[in-house]
Image (cartoon, rainbow, N blue to C red; front, side, top):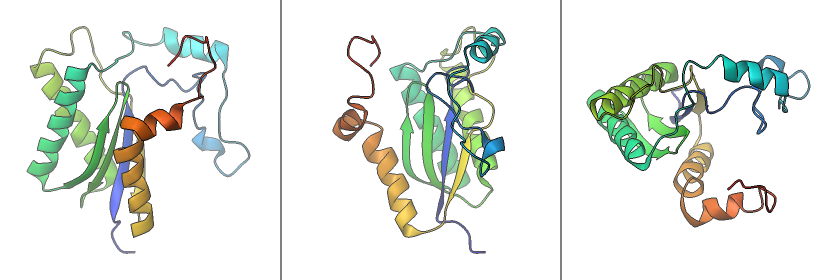
Length: 176
């Protein structure tokens, strides 16, 4: 099999996307065996929340910048090509060309980002910055590469993201 065009890597900050969150999560054990989208399970969500070692990590604007710079520096050091990156308040999307397996790339990026945040004094009171593992998608063709790039570059920030998420919440819900 030829090497992939790129990897689309996504990982979340610690405690911000629990498997029982009302927004839903994917049950990979059921993949291909009926519905894979989990819905809200209040008791499970409470149990997962109670197990957190510290409050969920939400990245500030400064932290988002530090994380992006650290990932770009790590990629340059490893001679990987960053095609697109979006560091959000509770997750990171990275589209990258790299020779090592995607898990190695993700682990390295998380490590460099954590170290940079610690050096910048942005992790006070945090044992963990990132959730365990993340999503590692292999992009095997040009069409998928373009779709992944557009998702990161156009739908994570700016007007398209605002339009995409418009109407996601009902009026008066207090969420944005």
